[in-house]
Amino acid sequence: MPYVKTALLSAFKKQDLEKYASKLLELGVKMWASAGTAKYLSEKGLEVNSIEKLTGFDQLLNGRVKTLHPAVFAGILARNTEQEEKSLKEAGYPKFDLVYVNLYPFIENAFEIEDETELVELIDIGGIALLRAAAKNFKRTVVATEYDDLKQIIETLERENYIPEEMSRNLAVKTFFMTSYYDSIIAKRFWDGAHFPKYMSLAGTNENMPELRYGENPHQHAALYMTHPAEGIPKAEVLWGKSLSFNNFVDLDSALMAVLDFKEPACVIVKHNSPCGIAVGKKLIDAYKAALASDPLSAFGGIVALNRKVDEETAELMRKHFFECIVAPEYDEQALETLKKRKNLRILRLPEFVRKWRYNAKIIAGGVLVQNDDPEEELIGDWQVVTDTKPTEAQREDLIFAMKAAKFVKSNSVVIAKNSATVGIGGGLPSRVDAAILAVRKAGDRANGAVAASDAFLPFPDTLYVLAQAGVKALIQPGGSRNDKLSIEAANKLGVAMVFTGRRHFRH
Image 1 (cartoon, rainbow, N blue to C red):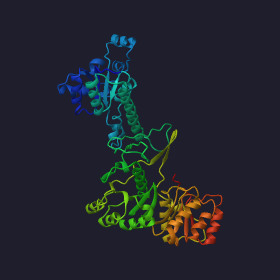
Image 2 (cartoon, one colour):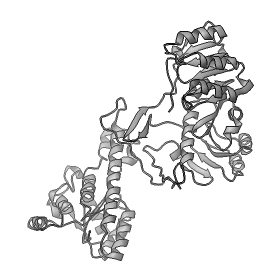
Image 3 (cartoon, helix red, strand yellow):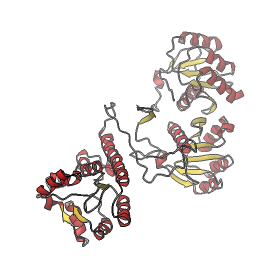
Image 4 (cartoon, rainbow, N blue to C red):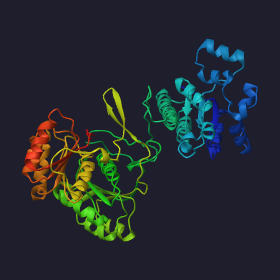
């Protein structure tokens, strides 16, 4: 178990370090520090040895080489064996029992500084090496990466006079995760995104993230880790309401990603990670009314995402319905006060509705799947009308809307839409016919004269018959089935306009 008699400190951010260094000195710990840190602590009146006295040279390459020296790393990596104790003594090197390092601020500047030459200088080499060495030798050396670690170490030393090995191990694990996160941000910043590299690291931090009471179910543990650069729901400000749950974050993300696809005032209502209402309108209130009307029963207890500032009139309508969460770029002052009348509602503000990272990942047992986003742009110019009946201009607009909406419904998905609003959604079913039946049931009479979208091709005309029988007059689908000819013949017989896009939109 580690006994701390000698410490090595190397800090880029030095403010308040003297408080912890002075505590260590009071405990009889001898202090060594890199040149800049030693100068800072000396100016604060603390007794500290500069690492230059040990290595025998000043900083090389304008400070890029300070601690990369055998005299430093031997003292960190040495184990409590007679042979290694003898080697250190013969070389005249001290043994370091505690290593504290905070790194150059690459992460904070990774996506702020465009000049790569300037940014490269913020990649920490020596600090990372010191931390990894100390973490590797956790049975003898204690490692710290932030003041909370130092505080914990000092309090333990004051109480026990040594550091329990389990605690040292936990600090080492934390350090390896942190250095991995640091390196992953470096790789992410310089990755061109045009290809998938041989090795992939996806990392995040739960610093300043809300604590989750549990996962999808009460017996599951959970935590939220925010990636860098910060974006999406983890970056949103909670203006009102209790803390968000695991399921809230999942549903909010689904709603947000869907509403981002629309340039017009839009509203998306999500329940259990699948949309139950999507609509656009000339005004936000129109979009909200239409989205809610799509399936008001399913919307109860749902999640709402909007892409415009919420005004008082819209807020007053929303207050009358029970929702778990609302996220929008902004709220009028009175609108916010109106929504706060719902005690159990969470209100989130996310001013910047811009995707910064165009990739997403799914974790499976034994692996991670990574893909680029399904782009929001639809290749309208490549669409092919394959039936004798052509869609009207109004139907064409609704078809565009319906296919955008279908992208965010779990496959198999069938969406029925009218006047740029969903009126029936069927999704998450193994059978496309069943998805169509569900969409028709949800739409009721509203299916008459509406259009429909399917996220994938129709292997048989049966889905088309279900939709046409309900009154759907135009259908959009990717095409590409061996039985496309049968579907086209059926559509011509039924007088339904059908468009092929050549692009599938599965969402598993």
